Length: 239
Image (cartoon, rainbow, N blue to C red):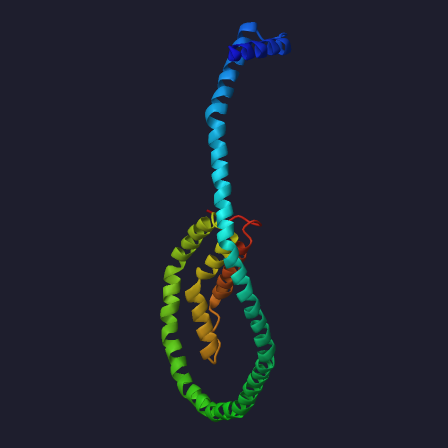
């Protein structure tokens, strides 16, 4: 009977509030369902929540009570340990500085002591090195002279394929990043660069320039190719 009266009262209240747009039958059903939900909450939900909160509070109090002596013991033990660490650091700091300065002195003394011996060894070995270089230079020149025609022949034979490979390689490098293009451009001519470095390092006579300026044209082609690879946005590589 009481629930019915409360439902009727709430229905009237809802009708008064929402009378402009809410039908009376819908307001009555809403009030009834709200009353049922409220009763279910007061009967089952609220006691369960209160019981859970009470148990959690009890467990928290027990944990705090159990941990309190341990926390106090840890504080009492940590304070002396911290003080001992401060004292130890203060006492050892002069020794650490002394060891550091001594290490620097030992290093400098060792370096100064070894430096004259290193200079003597270098001075002693330099004539033998020069003699070995002088002795081996004719053989190196001879090997360079013997291999030069073969290298020129291989270079001439591979020149058409090299041009085609350069074009294909350039087309492939267009889809890569600028960094990869620059690195790959240097890797495209390793044999030629190594050969020129060896010739300049070990040959006393400069190689004669072949007729029609082939080496100059090839060098210009190589430099132009490297420039193209390093500046792809400024020019287009032919397919």
